[in-house]
Amino acid sequence: MLIDTHCHIDRFPDPMGLATQCENYRVVTIAVTNVPSHFEMAASHIGSMRYVRPALGFHPLTAADNMRELPLFLSLLERAQYVGEIGLDYSKEGMSSREKQLQAFHAIAEALSRNPKFVTLHSRGSAEDVLEILEQYNVKQCVFHWYTGSMPTLARVIDSGHYLSFNTAMLEAKKGPSVLDRVPRDRVLTETDGPYVKAGRMPVRPLDVGRVIEGIAARWAVSVDDVEAKVTSNFERLCESLGLSTEGISP
Image 1 (cartoon, rainbow, N blue to C red):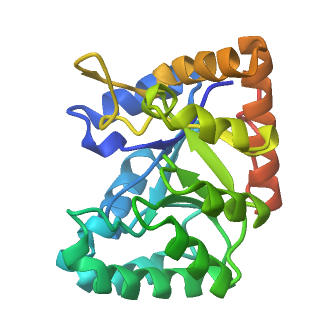
Image 2 (cartoon, rainbow, N blue to C red; image 1 turned 135 degrees about the vertical axis):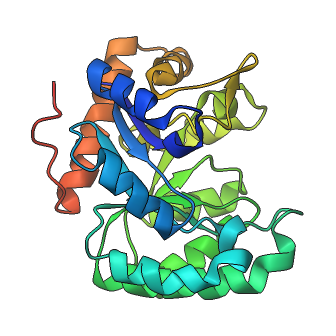
Protein backbone atom coordinates (compact mmCIF):
# COMPACT_ATOMS: atom_id res chain seq x y z
CA MET A 1 0.00 0.00 0.00
CA LEU A 2 1.36 3.43 -0.93
CA ILE A 3 0.90 6.13 1.69
CA ASP A 4 1.42 9.86 1.19
CA THR A 5 1.14 11.51 4.60
CA HIS A 6 1.63 15.06 3.29
CA CYS A 7 0.36 16.35 -0.05
CA HIS A 8 -1.16 19.72 -0.97
CA ILE A 9 -3.82 18.37 -3.31
CA ASP A 10 -5.63 21.72 -3.32
CA ARG A 11 -2.52 23.38 -4.82
CA PHE A 12 -2.63 21.32 -8.02
CA PRO A 13 -4.40 22.65 -11.13
CA ASP A 14 -7.07 19.92 -10.96
CA PRO A 15 -7.51 18.89 -7.31
CA MET A 16 -10.54 16.67 -7.90
CA GLY A 17 -8.85 14.92 -10.80
CA LEU A 18 -5.82 14.18 -8.62
CA ALA A 19 -7.97 13.02 -5.70
CA THR A 20 -9.84 10.70 -8.05
CA GLN A 21 -6.52 9.31 -9.29
CA CYS A 22 -5.51 8.58 -5.68
CA GLU A 23 -8.82 6.77 -5.16
CA ASN A 24 -8.47 4.76 -8.36
CA TYR A 25 -4.92 3.65 -7.53
CA ARG A 26 -5.66 3.23 -3.81
CA VAL A 27 -2.96 5.61 -2.64
CA VAL A 28 -3.71 6.67 0.94
CA THR A 29 -3.24 10.44 0.87
CA ILE A 30 -3.40 12.99 3.66
CA ALA A 31 -4.56 16.13 1.86
CA VAL A 32 -3.11 18.94 3.97
CA THR A 33 -4.50 22.48 3.86
CA ASN A 34 -3.07 25.89 4.73
CA VAL A 35 -6.10 27.48 6.43
CA PRO A 36 -9.25 26.01 8.01
CA SER A 37 -11.58 27.53 5.42
CA HIS A 38 -9.74 25.47 2.80
CA PHE A 39 -10.26 22.37 4.95
CA GLU A 40 -13.99 23.06 4.94
CA MET A 41 -13.97 23.23 1.15
CA ALA A 42 -11.84 20.09 0.89
CA ALA A 43 -14.09 18.16 3.26
CA SER A 44 -17.15 19.05 1.18
CA HIS A 45 -15.50 17.67 -1.97
CA ILE A 46 -13.35 14.73 -0.82
CA GLY A 47 -14.67 14.00 2.68
CA SER A 48 -16.47 10.86 1.55
CA MET A 49 -13.48 9.38 -0.28
CA ARG A 50 -11.97 6.15 0.99
CA TYR A 51 -8.27 6.79 0.45
CA VAL A 52 -7.99 10.59 0.44
CA ARG A 53 -8.25 12.19 3.88
CA PRO A 54 -8.65 15.99 4.25
CA ALA A 55 -6.48 17.53 6.98
CA LEU A 56 -7.28 20.67 8.98
CA GLY A 57 -4.43 23.11 8.53
CA PHE A 58 -3.06 26.45 9.67
CA HIS A 59 0.27 26.83 7.88
CA PRO A 60 2.74 29.00 9.83
CA LEU A 61 3.43 31.20 6.80
CA THR A 62 -0.27 32.06 6.59
CA ALA A 63 -0.51 33.03 10.26
CA ALA A 64 0.07 36.79 9.94
CA ASP A 65 -2.65 37.29 7.35
CA ASN A 66 -5.17 34.76 8.68
CA MET A 67 -5.30 35.04 12.46
CA ARG A 68 -9.03 35.68 12.12
CA GLU A 69 -9.32 32.01 11.06
CA LEU A 70 -7.72 30.64 14.23
CA PRO A 71 -11.09 30.43 16.06
CA LEU A 72 -12.46 28.55 13.05
CA PHE A 73 -9.57 26.08 13.27
CA LEU A 74 -10.28 25.46 16.95
CA SER A 75 -14.00 25.01 16.31
CA LEU A 76 -13.34 22.46 13.53
CA LEU A 77 -10.77 20.42 15.44
CA GLU A 78 -13.21 18.03 17.06
CA ARG A 79 -14.67 17.12 13.67
CA ALA A 80 -11.32 16.64 11.92
CA GLN A 81 -9.44 13.33 12.05
CA TYR A 82 -6.23 14.63 10.48
CA VAL A 83 -4.43 17.92 11.18
CA GLY A 84 -1.87 19.61 8.97
CA GLU A 85 -0.07 21.51 7.95
CA ILE A 86 0.67 23.25 11.23
CA GLY A 87 3.85 24.31 13.03
CA LEU A 88 6.44 27.09 12.93
CA ASP A 89 8.68 28.56 10.22
CA TYR A 90 11.77 30.54 11.19
CA SER A 91 13.17 30.87 7.69
CA LYS A 92 13.82 34.33 6.25
CA GLU A 93 10.30 34.23 4.83
CA GLY A 94 8.73 33.48 8.18
CA MET A 95 10.67 35.56 10.67
CA SER A 96 8.48 38.66 10.36
CA SER A 97 5.43 36.66 11.50
CA ARG A 98 7.20 34.67 14.24
CA GLU A 99 5.18 36.05 17.15
CA LYS A 100 1.84 35.42 15.45
CA GLN A 101 2.99 31.93 14.48
CA LEU A 102 3.84 31.21 18.11
CA GLN A 103 0.50 32.55 19.26
CA ALA A 104 -1.35 30.31 16.83
CA PHE A 105 0.75 27.21 17.48
CA HIS A 106 0.42 27.50 21.26
CA ALA A 107 -3.37 27.70 20.91
CA ILE A 108 -3.45 24.73 18.52
CA ALA A 109 -1.13 22.60 20.69
CA GLU A 110 -3.24 23.32 23.75
CA ALA A 111 -6.35 22.20 21.85
CA LEU A 112 -4.59 19.07 20.59
CA SER A 113 -3.64 18.14 24.14
CA ARG A 114 -7.35 17.65 24.81
CA ASN A 115 -8.23 16.16 21.42
CA PRO A 116 -5.39 14.08 19.87
CA LYS A 117 -5.25 13.78 16.10
CA PHE A 118 -2.97 12.54 13.34
CA VAL A 119 -0.73 15.62 13.03
CA THR A 120 1.72 16.48 10.25
CA LEU A 121 4.12 19.26 11.29
CA HIS A 122 6.10 22.03 9.60
CA SER A 123 9.34 22.83 11.44
CA ARG A 124 11.65 24.69 9.05
CA GLY A 125 14.33 26.40 11.13
CA SER A 126 12.17 25.87 14.21
CA ALA A 127 12.26 22.19 15.14
CA GLU A 128 13.50 22.82 18.68
CA ASP A 129 10.68 25.28 19.44
CA VAL A 130 8.08 23.03 17.79
CA LEU A 131 9.20 20.12 19.94
CA GLU A 132 9.28 22.20 23.13
CA ILE A 133 5.71 23.41 22.57
CA LEU A 134 4.52 19.86 21.90
CA GLU A 135 6.20 18.78 25.13
CA GLN A 136 4.73 21.74 27.03
CA TYR A 137 1.20 20.63 26.11
CA ASN A 138 1.95 16.90 26.18
CA VAL A 139 1.07 16.42 22.50
CA LYS A 140 2.43 13.05 21.41
CA GLN A 141 2.94 10.94 18.28
CA CYS A 142 3.07 13.69 15.69
CA VAL A 143 4.72 13.42 12.27
CA PHE A 144 7.59 15.81 11.54
CA HIS A 145 7.30 16.44 7.80
CA TRP A 146 10.51 17.17 5.80
CA TYR A 147 12.73 17.44 8.89
CA THR A 148 15.77 19.74 8.43
CA GLY A 149 16.67 20.46 12.05
CA SER A 150 19.76 19.56 14.03
CA MET A 151 20.76 16.03 14.96
CA PRO A 152 20.52 16.68 18.73
CA THR A 153 16.94 17.91 18.27
CA LEU A 154 16.21 14.91 16.05
CA ALA A 155 17.31 12.64 18.89
CA ARG A 156 14.85 14.41 21.19
CA VAL A 157 12.08 14.12 18.59
CA ILE A 158 12.68 10.37 18.45
CA ASP A 159 12.93 10.02 22.23
CA SER A 160 9.59 11.82 22.52
CA GLY A 161 7.91 9.17 20.36
CA HIS A 162 7.25 11.21 17.23
CA TYR A 163 7.44 10.01 13.62
CA LEU A 164 9.17 11.48 10.56
CA SER A 165 7.98 11.48 6.96
CA PHE A 166 10.40 11.43 4.02
CA ASN A 167 10.09 12.63 0.43
CA THR A 168 12.35 12.36 -2.61
CA ALA A 169 13.85 15.83 -2.09
CA MET A 170 14.96 14.81 1.41
CA LEU A 171 16.54 11.60 0.22
CA GLU A 172 18.41 13.46 -2.52
CA ALA A 173 19.64 16.23 -0.22
CA LYS A 174 23.04 16.04 1.45
CA LYS A 175 21.61 15.77 4.96
CA GLY A 176 18.49 13.70 4.27
CA PRO A 177 20.01 10.20 4.19
CA SER A 178 21.78 10.81 7.49
CA VAL A 179 18.43 11.81 9.02
CA LEU A 180 16.90 8.58 7.71
CA ASP A 181 19.78 6.58 9.20
CA ARG A 182 19.02 7.93 12.66
CA VAL A 183 15.27 7.35 12.68
CA PRO A 184 14.08 3.97 13.98
CA ARG A 185 12.50 2.06 11.12
CA ASP A 186 9.22 1.79 12.97
CA ARG A 187 8.92 5.62 12.97
CA VAL A 188 9.42 6.16 9.24
CA LEU A 189 6.56 7.35 7.01
CA THR A 190 6.43 8.54 3.42
CA GLU A 191 5.21 11.77 1.82
CA THR A 192 5.48 13.70 -1.44
CA ASP A 193 4.83 17.33 -0.38
CA GLY A 194 3.51 17.79 -3.90
CA PRO A 195 3.34 20.08 -5.74
CA TYR A 196 6.28 21.75 -3.97
CA VAL A 197 8.65 18.84 -4.57
CA LYS A 198 9.48 18.29 -8.22
CA ALA A 199 10.63 15.35 -10.32
CA GLY A 200 12.54 17.17 -13.00
CA ARG A 201 10.23 20.05 -13.85
CA MET A 202 7.04 18.24 -12.91
CA PRO A 203 5.46 18.37 -9.45
CA VAL A 204 5.34 15.01 -7.71
CA ARG A 205 1.96 13.40 -7.09
CA PRO A 206 0.87 10.85 -4.49
CA LEU A 207 1.42 7.99 -6.93
CA ASP A 208 5.10 9.07 -7.01
CA VAL A 209 5.51 8.04 -3.37
CA GLY A 210 6.78 4.79 -4.89
CA ARG A 211 10.00 6.67 -5.64
CA VAL A 212 10.37 7.46 -1.94
CA ILE A 213 9.90 3.78 -1.15
CA GLU A 214 12.63 2.93 -3.66
CA GLY A 215 15.01 5.47 -2.13
CA ILE A 216 14.47 4.16 1.38
CA ALA A 217 14.89 0.57 0.19
CA ALA A 218 18.23 1.44 -1.38
CA ARG A 219 19.41 3.14 1.82
CA TRP A 220 18.25 0.27 4.02
CA ALA A 221 19.51 -2.39 1.58
CA VAL A 222 16.16 -4.20 1.66
CA SER A 223 13.46 -4.85 -0.90
CA VAL A 224 10.85 -2.32 -2.00
CA ASP A 225 8.17 -4.71 -0.72
CA ASP A 226 9.79 -4.76 2.70
CA VAL A 227 9.79 -0.95 2.93
CA GLU A 228 6.22 -0.67 1.69
CA ALA A 229 5.09 -3.22 4.28
CA LYS A 230 7.01 -1.41 7.04
CA VAL A 231 5.58 2.01 6.20
CA THR A 232 2.07 0.53 6.02
CA SER A 233 2.53 -1.09 9.42
CA ASN A 234 3.87 2.18 10.90
CA PHE A 235 0.94 4.19 9.52
CA GLU A 236 -1.66 1.70 10.73
CA ARG A 237 -0.10 1.51 14.20
CA LEU A 238 -0.01 5.30 14.52
CA CYS A 239 -3.63 5.65 13.36
CA GLU A 240 -4.83 2.93 15.69
CA SER A 241 -3.01 4.46 18.68
CA LEU A 242 -4.89 7.70 17.96
CA GLY A 243 -8.23 5.94 17.62
CA LEU A 244 -8.41 6.36 13.85
CA SER A 245 -9.73 3.40 11.89
CA THR A 246 -7.76 2.08 8.92
CA GLU A 247 -10.47 -0.45 8.12
CA GLY A 248 -11.17 -0.55 4.43
CA ILE A 249 -7.82 0.83 3.27
CA SER A 250 -5.57 -2.10 4.08
CA PRO A 251 -4.60 -4.29 1.15
